[in-house]
Length: 325
Length: 277
Image (cartoon, rainbow over the protein chains, first blue to last red):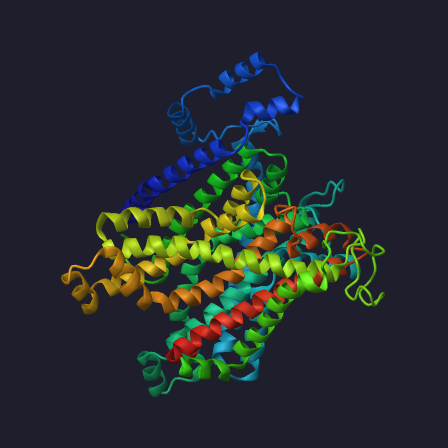
């Protein structure tokens, strides 16, 4: 246990320069953006006098030299203060915290679905390599891999909501229904189906292809031949010997995909009106709320760093040959 | 080269990809000839279903714009953005990876930290932020996609250069007193090119998907017709005119699929021993 703790502490320390780098980067992007917060507010009010503008700039510290502003920004970030969203009239951290659970729910469900089904399909394809079932799985995976995520979302709405009327086409819950307990959970679950399927599809294809390739690679190793030579049946070889080794690269992949999942959820949340971080980012773009947009970028990057630490821990647990360093 | 072509031609999937890809390229090249007008012009009756009017085989959208013209012109934008953005990413990634791998030491450390930094920021979200801040145009979209997609190239190139660095022919060049730049460009790079080309060809597909996603969100260049833009606008009429969304999506799917098949075909033909992957 103390080793685990030491490892975690070290990983957090290693993440500090990355987070710092992203924060500095964020600060300069914010400054490159045409017009600062005072200009935007003044424009909103339909013009403002010079004095008022200067007063506003002083209030936000925008009249200070750049390095002072940078220092202040970093100090704020360190204390989890990402500034204020004038559009929503709320602190950026508060806004993000309110929207994060919906996005996490969507991401976790999509990854779980993609991971489990991807493994099943990948193993099936690899066990029947070059047979019809392998070809079918591979072709479907190829198609899903090339499909634009927002487009398949719209097509699913068309099929399952508009034509068949099975599932709701958007939102997270039925508006005005005011449900309690099990009915509330069931309502959210129904709203969750299409967004989850849409977000999962691409990763499903990816994991299927990866699992198939990984299984085939392990099949070629000597210990598999040994297992067969000692008379084990194919089933046992596949699940006890090959599968356990082939699943390891999948876990690595999981960590690498977090950032891309967050990007995908911007599109999925926009298509389905899912009230998460991605939808918030989309709104921020059109409200020219740069402070909020960059806050979302920073928090998302932190999420990526965090999940990768978690994946390393899981990896070490799954493969005792790997030591936490 | 002959071997390569023979192996490529034997791969039916890759050949199919090449054929679709050629068709899309032909669409892009023929767009100004077949549809000389501006694809944004309202030329037809609105909401024509595909096939309803032989003059507009793919129908028209809610403003009476010819969908076939939009899809042909969209092919230009998709291919242009995909290829140029990949070129930007390759230029950045190969330069950074080559310098890091060749020089090693602290240069490598600094550059790899930078790569890690860029790899941590979620790519699509980062692209959205860049395009939103610098205003959408073909140039900002291309640069944004390039800036968010170079890290994997840098890692790949660095790996190749690290192993090339210790090879005898490179050591011989160093012993002869050849300049670093010359060794990197004329001696190491040609030997690292094969995997970079394969990665690059697959990156074009990702870049096209990214551009479509940005345009769908309303971050496309307002002056050019893009497949993602048509889908984004057609969303409003999904219930009454589904084909406005469906058709450009199929165009994106086929293009991306073709590039993936082609890229994998090139990879398999270059590395015949890895056929099973």
